[in-house]
Length: 444
Ligand SMILES: Cc1ncc(COP(=O)(O)O)c(C=O)c1O
Image (tube, rainbow, N blue to C red):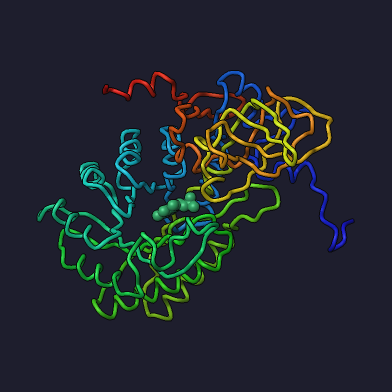
């Protein structure tokens, strides 16, 4: 039994708590996900490679639908998108949130119903808007005053487009300053406090071809507490009430964005969806009743919480270097396939897979292969003391904002994505080859 002051000894189950539910250790040193040994994925597809557990993605979509039965759940494509993901999300009954013509076209050409798609973006390009109108996107979220006239002109006097307005509720939340988007004075949305949101709404109401269906806000990312969402509900309902008073306007939708936090390492908190759903619904009902408003339909846009825990990044160790103070374990990927530690200081829990080591755990820093001292994937983590070149390392919670944020740095090429399901592995996205890189370079 542990006392209050003794740290709990992590159990084998704790160690897999941030892995897909299908992850098991059939024998010491081997780890299978979706019924496929990770060492087999590495042998077959090479490394670095991203592995995505299809069932985990689908199950997470179902958990959302179950927790929010009356809401429209839109998967935020920016977390990770490919054609298989589009299928899974569509089949599980979710909508889609996209933020570029690229994401939108991929989804629609894969067969995703455009009316279930919402287009975001703080600075939509002419191509984004033209593509959205051409493909018949469900709603466009207006993010700046100039977008109103541009969109109205593009829709034309006889056209029709549903829109929402991205509102800045003035609430700071999220795992890092760079991903807090609900506070004042950042590039997203239109503020309630300086009146820009109200002004934009009045202008939209003057455009008969634009139908304002509701308000949107997105507080930030990697939020692990329900409280900021409840504060957002109150602010947004306050604005709905003012709009009703001033314009007699009844808006039937309220989109609270995404940002639901996940655990990257065992023991870290994640946002509890059931509590979020229950408390947000209650807060919304109470605030609307107090304001004499009908309760709008809720929309939510989770990205990370659907894709993140379903993904794993696999690397081979290329070198182990012991300096005075540190042991640097260098792998065959790095900041080009995972910029998140360098961008936001995110901490991961890599693990040796593919062989059993009886060596004691020792502190190491896992670094990438890129020409930058800040190319650190996991600082001060524990790996077996006999870690050596050729070993395989697996990084859990790597399904969101890894491939979608991957870069071309050092021309190493972006890793492939392999889906695992029911004992089978299949390639979803192939590795970016040197030929791919060369073929884009067309001038001399
Ligand atoms: C408008 C909007 N919705 C949803 C999301 C998804 O956020 P998360 O992946 O943290 O759930 C983002 C992330 O940037 C966003 O900007």
